Length: 318
Image (cartoon, rainbow, N blue to C red; front, side, top):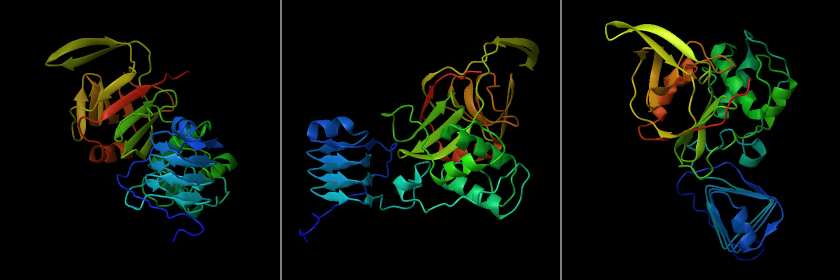
C-alpha cells in the first residue's frame, strides 16, 4: 500500500468550505502555514494547488485541490480531494476547474430578456448550480432569471446587462467565486457587499445563495406617513451602515413599516432588514434596508436562522 504514492486519508468531517486559496510554489512549514487560508498546513509542501478549509499534515499537495478534508501523512499529485457528502452545494460559485463541477459548454447563442427555449434552460440550470437564484428552470427568461444573471455578472466583474453574450457565457464556463469580505467569519453568515450590490449567504462555509440587492440610496429623505393613528414626518439619510450585526426578529409575508412595505423581512440592525421588494434596481434605492428579489426573499427565511452574523462592507460609487 505504501508503494508509489503514500496512503491518503481523507476525513471529510464538517462540511465547511471557504474561498479557494491558490498557492504556487510554496514549501516548508512556515511558508505553508502562512499561505494557508482557513486551514492548517504543517510540515508540508503545496505546489500549484489549493487547500480550502482543510488540514495537510506531513504531506505534499502538488497540482491538486483539497477541500473540506484532511490529508494526513499523504500526497496529492495532480488530483482533487473533495467533500464526501454531496448533500451540500459545496461547489457553489467556485471556479469549475477547481471544484470538479460537471463541465459546462456554453451554447454561445446571444439571449435577451423574454427569450424562451433550451438555451435559456441551460442558462438557468448553470446559474442555479453556481448558487444563484434564477427561479424555475423552465426555459423562460423573465425577471427572476434576470436578477440572478445580474448577481452573477457583478461577481464576475462584468457590467450587468440583460443580454447574455460571449463574455457572460465564458464566465459561466469558468466562474469566479464571490469575494470573501470576512475571511475569518463564522461558517454560517451573511455578507453584504455594498460596492458590488451583492449578498452572499454562507452555510457551513459554503456560498449557498448569491443574490443581487439594492441597498440604501444615501440620499437624505423626508417621508410623511400615518403611523400609530397620526400623520407623522420621518427623515433620514437612507444609508445602509457598514458593520457587523446579527439577525434578530422577522415577519412572515408583507410587513408594513412607516417607510413602506417589506416582504419576509429579516431584521439585523434595528429597523434595517433583508427583505423582498417589488423594485430592486441596479443601483441603491432603499431607505437603508437591503432589498432582495421576491423569489430570493421567498427562500431566505428557510435558510437563515436567528442570531446569524451579518457583515456589511463597502460603498457603492455612482
